[in-house]
Image (cartoon, rainbow, N blue to C red; front, top):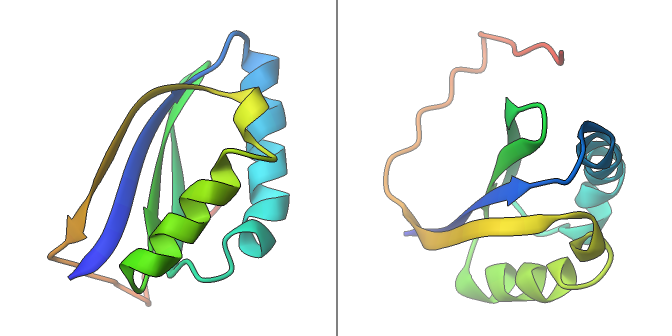
Length: 99
């Protein structure tokens, strides 16, 4: 099993979410170096859903402790789900473009 978090986040303004996304894109690889995958999905102009996948429970716990620090002030967490990813399909030949 692969420890996975799904987090829904709401922001007061579009600008607050853009600030969060810029910071997350820039800093998340160093904030969560053990993550196997970090995915952010914009759902509205002021909300998004993040998915993070870790190799083990220890890495997930460490990542959650870091979340309470640098990025926490930017976001109002709507809900958090934790579970184990049981199916993963990756299609490396189908590129995803930003934007």
